[in-house]
Length: 355
Image (cartoon, rainbow, N blue to C red; front, side, top):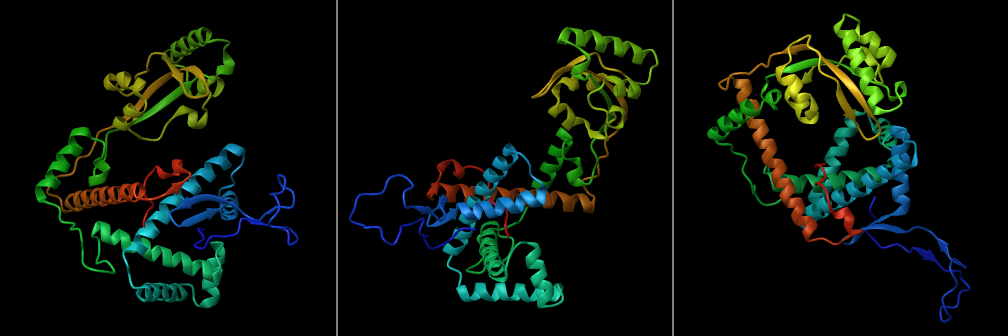
C-alpha cells in the first residue's frame, strides 16, 4: 500500500565520492524501488504495485499483457481514490485514541467470529495480510467510514454532529414512482418486473462465406429454410458463430435490450411470439456478419401499486441511495480538485466505496 515516510530510491556504493561527477547511466547504481504514484504526501511504490498484481493474477487467473496492463491501471486508480478518501477522513481530526478503540473492538469481534487468535491469523493469511497490515487496513477503513458518515449523514460521525439529513419528502417518492412507470427500466427496483422477451439468434459464422454479400445471400437462404419449417437450433449448430443453447437467450428486459442493441428495436416493436426478423447486418469490434432473430416468447411487465408497503420501502431506499452517491461524488470531486496527484491522468474516475 502507500508508504507514509519517503523512501530511498537509489543506493550509492559506499566508496562513491559525493564530490565527483555523477556516474554514467547504471554504473554503480542499484535500484531498490521506485515511486509510481504520488497522492499529496503519500506515495505508491512499484514493489507494492507488483505485490498487488501478483495477488490479483493468482486470484483471477489473469493471462496476457493486455489483461495485466488493465489490472495495473485499475489498481493504481483505485489506490488513488482510496488514499484520498483516507486522507480526508484523517483531516477531520478524529481523536486517534478513539480510532484505535474502534479498531480494537473490530478485531475482538473478528477474533470471536473466527474462534480465537489462530483462526483470525488464518483469515488474515487468506487475504495475504499479516497482523500489522491487517490492523493498518482496519484503521484506514475506520477513517473512510468516518468520512462517509460525515458526508452522507447515514449515522452519527465520530466528531461533531450530523451534517446531512436523510429525510425524503413523500411527494418525491410519488414523482420517482411515476418516472419508473414512464420509462419501464427500473421496475425491479420497486419490486415489479419489466416486460421480458426470449429470443433465438442465428448469427452466421464468417468462416461460412467469403465476403459480406455472399454472407447476406446465405443468410437469406437460411431464413427461408427456417420459415419452411427447419429447426433454427440445428441450423445454428451448423452455420452459427454462437452455438450455446441453440441460440436461445435467457429472459431479457425488452426496454434495456432495445437500448443496448438499437437495430433490434424496429423488429421488437411489432413482433409477436414466433415471428422471424429480416436478415440484419451484425457488427462488433472483431467481426462483420449477418443474423436472423426470432421472438420466442414475451412476458408482460408487472407493476406494483404505489400504496404497497414494499413499494414505499423500495422507493425510499432508491432515493436515499441516489442521494448518498450524489453527495459522495460531489465530495470526491472537491478532493480531486484540491489535491496533488501524479501522474495527473490518475485523477479521473469515481470515488472509492466506503470501508
